[in-house]
Image 1: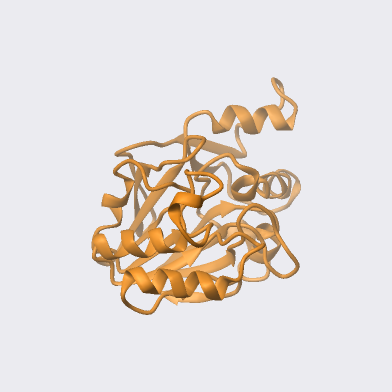
Image 2: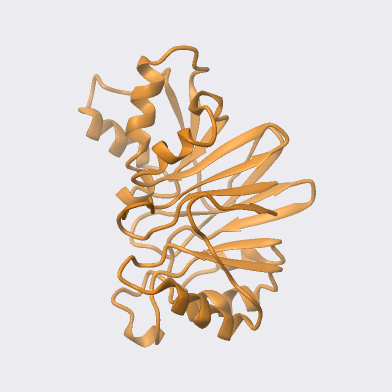
Length: 248
């Protein structure tokens, strides 16, 4: 199984750094996970968008979902596409997407097939099994455990430290974890994101093999985020960067 980083910025894209988006690839199965701004263009530089087997939108915030609109129009008007394409997402996201397209009469049925997913949900696409949990965020948000050939990738998406979502990361081979903030957890601008130090501690508690942090606020030095995560994890920590490929 491979993780390919399309973008890793929190909140908004910056030159050369799209917002959140990833490909999970295994044995001919390609999943697009989150569609933040700039990720659809990045995806097209790596694979033919028409070959994507399914999409996961972890939540409806724009930095994780906005490029689904571009993809939708490419699928709708472009040639040679297999439809409908499944989109795994939290309940309610389909209605929000349809509303943005124009409301009743603009439903994407036949082009995108939304599959509402939540705590304890499970789905298999091709050779990859996904297990879903709900994270600690301001809107319904999925964390996803990807499994293939006895290898495990867990993606936290956006979350604070509350709840039990982190149990799904236990013994993951790769833990892709948000690390929006730096410094003391007591001084976070908003409690439903993690600091790099919190990400490292969660990874250590869950006994993951490798930690890769992502979703660093664009105003911050990502090198410092890596240092803070390493201090609590106790081992080297990777930093998600556009174009990076990681073997899980």
